Image (cartoon, rainbow over all chains, first blue to last red; front, top):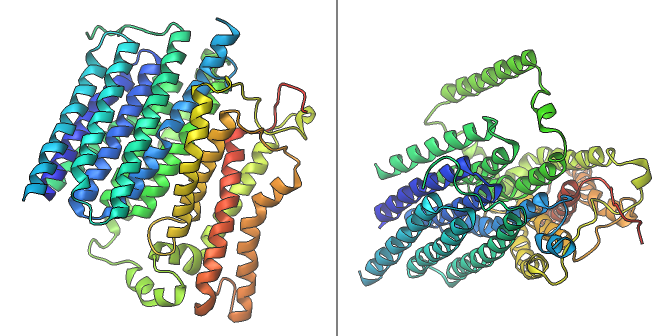
Length: 97
Length: 102
Length: 314
C-alpha cells in the first residue's frame, strides 16, 4: 500500500506542476490566485498521502494547518485587490454599482 | 484486503478529479470558467482521497482530523471562489488567455 | 525507488517555484509563487521527518507571510511601477548576486562536510530528555536545552513591532492600528470571518497544548491564533486595538517577560535557564501558553501595520 500512496503522491505533484503553469501565465491576478489555491488543495492531498505511506499520522496536523489557512491568503488577495487595499468586493459593488 | 481495495479505488478516483481540475484550469477559455472548473474538481478530488484514507487511519482522532481537513477545504474553496470571482468581475478581468493557449 | 522519484519531482518543483518567485515577472506573481514555495518546503520538511518545522513553515510560510506580502502589495500598487522597477542600481544588484552565490556555496560546503551517518546531537538530547519535563525532543531543545534561542526569537518579534510602529504618522498616534476595514455587513467575507475563528481557536489551542508531547508549540499555535484574529479584524468584526492601549502592550511583552523571569529564576538552581526536573513541565507549559498569546497578538499587529485610520476615531 505504501508504494500505491507514494505513486499517487508523485502523480499529484505532477498535477500541481500543471496548476503552477497557470500561476505563471495568468493573465488575470484572479487566475494566479486560484491556481495557487488548487496547488494548496493538492498539497494537502499530497501530505495526507505521505502520512498514509509512512503511517506517520502526526503529519495530518500539517494538512490541518494548511487547510485552515488556505482561505486566508485568498482573503488577503481580495483585500489587496480592492480599491483602498482594505475593502471587500461586495462592499465595493454597493458603493459603486 | 477489502479495505485496501476500497482505498485504492477511492484515492485513484480522487486523483482523476485533481487531473480534471488542472486540465480545466489550463484549457478553459476565460477566468470565470477556470474558477468554475477547479473549485468543483479539487474539492471532490480531496474528498475522495480523504474517504479512501478514512478506512486506513488507526484512531477516531485521526479520522476526525481527516473530516475536519475536508470540511475546512470545502468552506475555504466556496468562500474564496466567491470572493475572488467577484473581485475579478468588478475589475472586468475575466480575461481570455493572452498567450494563445486554448 | 518510488520515494526517490517523489523527492526528485519535489526538488524540481521547489527549484522552479523559487526561480519563479524571484525572476521578477511582476510583484503579484512573485507573491503567489512565494506562497506556493512555503507549501512545497513544508512538504519537503515532512519528507525529512521534521514535522515541527513543517508545521511552522505551513503556518508562517504558506499562511501568514502570504497575507503580509499581499497587504504590502495592496499598499504598493498605487505607487508608480516603473519607478519601483529601476530602484535598485546595477552595481548593487551584482553585489547582491555575488553575496547570495557566496552564501549558497558556503551552505553547500557545510552540508557536504557533514558526516552523512552522524547522529548530531540526537544522543545528547535523548540522554537528557527525562530531565527536560517534556516528551517532544524539539520542545525540550527549544524551551529547555537551548531556551535562550527561543527567548531571543520572541524578543525579535517585539522589536519588529516597535519598528513597524515607528512608521506611524504623528497625527495617527493613539488611534487604532491598521487601516479602517470596509466590509459589507453579513456578506460572504464577514460570514466567513464568523465561521472560521471557532475552529481556528480550537486548532491553535490544540497545537500549544500538544507541543509538550508531539509536534506543535507556542510559535505554531500562536501563528494560527494570529491568523484567526486577523481574519476577524479583516472581516470587520471587531475594531483593532488602539496603539497606546496599555493592556495591548502588556500582552505583547508578557510572554518574553515571563520567559526571562523563569530564566533568571534558574540562577537559584544553578544558572540562567536551568529548570529543575520536577518543576520543568509546569514552567514550560506556562511559558508556552503565555508566549503563544504574546506571539499571536504581536504577529497580528505586525500584519495590520502602524495606525493609519482614515476616519476619526470614536
